[in-house]
Length: 150
Ligand SMILES: Nc1ncnc2c1ncn2[C@@H]1O[C@H](COP(=O)(O)OP(=O)(O)O)[C@@H](O)[C@H]1O
Ligand SMILES: [Mg+2]
Image (cartoon, rainbow, N blue to C red):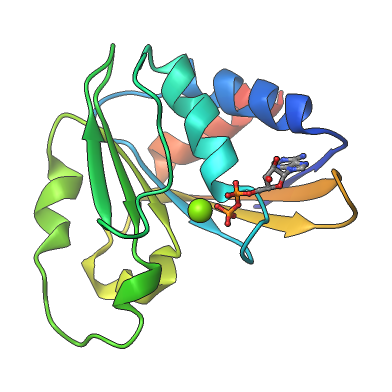
């Protein structure tokens, strides 16, 4: 089961992200896929806001991982630059802690990801228009999607 939502503005992206954030719990894992400029980092910033994170969240491309304290802590990963690395960097340990994890370009570390997660795809349709596709893997995320899209 996949859930699709057409988004017409950046504000709508922010709303969707904050609604999702209100349902998130420690240990949740979200993967974000979409071309450069699709809105992965923009979406993550609003999830962070919704988790009660007050620090500015920006793209972790050059550091790969940034961690933030909040009502629920956040691990924000952007693994784009790991594209040509075969090394096992042990990211998986992150995904079993107390934080919510959001991973941009997650397919590049597919083997390190937990089997249960919420996979989010963002397609840029037009200037400010996006198509979001949510695909839950596991009971926890199926319930989360039902609540989010009911
Ligand atoms: N509906 C929308 N949702 C998200 N971003 C949008 C939207 N409309 C326009 N934008 C713009 O698109 C860009 C998305 O950039 P960013 O979030 O860094 O993408 P990514 O992390 O996927 O490379 C930003 O400049 C943002 O202002
Ligand atoms: Mg980004």
